[in-house]
Image (tube, rainbow, N blue to C red; front, top):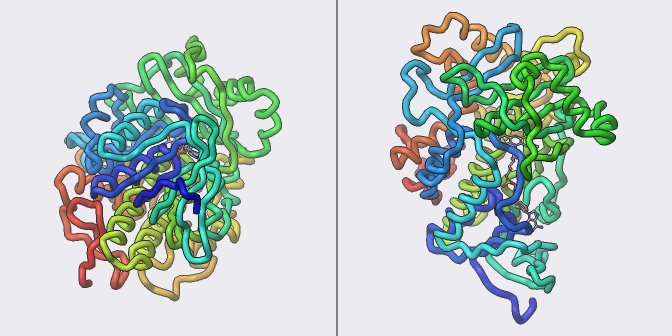
Length: 494
Ligand code: FAD
């Protein structure tokens, strides 16, 4: 070790939503946290449509919910989809009872540069030593554990810092995730490419859905349409990788062509100019973005957010998974420092995080399956009957074990049957929307939909009421449950 190495309880690499959340949740317990962020905030990031669990759950637990609410972000009651069997658009409301929407069944559409800066400033406020312009280049480790990181300060000098735990929250471009062992597995099903940019305005859906994200399937894939401000709309196309050459050659022209190919979105943008303000004046590209790791921790190091896993953006789950994983990691770090067995703490983190990821992952596969377009090469290749072995094995591994504790549920046969059942369930729930009385939300009558939003609901209850409305059960025999404030694990004795 270098003589001048600084010493902390925890070092967090990356100041996005995952990093800012874990850092604050550990600092709230009085521990010494260093957060190293390569860029200087505010910085651009994609991922603008949030879920209620982040806004009312995690942000409330971190003490930043009021500031987020006061920032003037667009309110979002849910999602509007032109997707599935019907040619007509339908709505997914966050509220259990859309007509009697309770005051917390909404989320926000956020300019990530502003949202992420609020979370990072909050981390600083609760005591995190946040340093921007500092790039982590590697970890300090021996055979037993990870002990710290090597980083370069804004002046270009090499530095070293040591801690009991290093958290990798450095996003999809993480260079250090390999240090926990295990590679990234990329989903075959979601090998898509996204091309996205901004318009200086755009029509809004009729009230009260004017703040919704609008996702429209078309022959070549699907488009998102996110109202960020009256004069700013985020529009992105998710299409097959066969478009990669055209996109690379001319991203902006391909983006415009794809928008023009989807009448529902094209109509909302007629006569609206492309945005010219920075950072919204560029058309950007991201590819191959659904992956997971076989291992999420080793002694002294843990992965969260996009550094750990990511699934296709159609359900707006990225920031939820990042901040949920961050909260689980913070519980494990806080409990382990307080003396609870380290392996037990981090096995709990990993089991819950993988399970939550697995639920969204299988939901999105089944959701893709419900889109019908016989002429389309893109949609014909995205049926549950076409899911390959990598994705089926992942489903068994991620969802299987915890779903029932039944070890007989293994193998690709079981997985594809489950996915087909999920898809039928979602399809039927969407079908019921047409004759809904508006008092109940038929989507939540689907066990699949309920299961996917279950943890998010518990998070929200924790944020709003200070604890879940029902006693939390351990997710497996002998498992741990969260403390009342949500910042630690406790042994439930069950
Ligand atoms: P990031 O937000 O990427 O933050 C990582 C931080 O680490 C960055 O600030 C980076 O500068 C820093 N960093 C990187 N390397 C280093 C280093 N070596 N040293 C120090 N710092 C470093 N999610 C949603 O919730 N809703 C959506 O609508 C949505 N749409 C999406 C659309 C697309 C096309 C894609 C690709 C993703 C979308 N997402 C969406 C996902 C969302 O972008 C991510 O899940 C989310 O940003 C992950 O947060 P994070 O904190 O893990 O990583």
